[in-house]
Image (cartoon, rainbow, N blue to C red):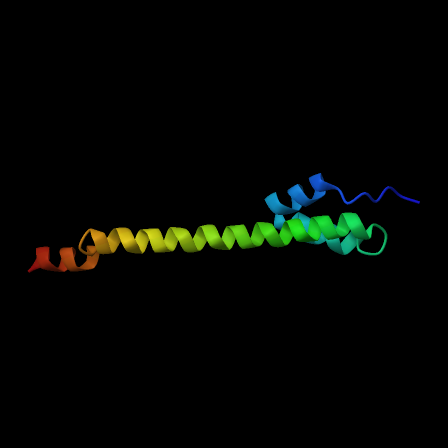
Length: 80
């Protein structure tokens, strides 16, 4: 019987590199279900964190553009 303790570090690896977490989940789902679950959850968390960071960056850039009076409006006014 193989050691199947859940592996926090496998979950952390899955969080940092979600593709690796997904691959480990698929490989270990039958032989090491606890470790596979940790890697899979880590992959999901990593993807969600990446999406949240992306959304925050977009919102921040839009808010900065609006606060500055709009880049497009300022450029158009300078041309005419």
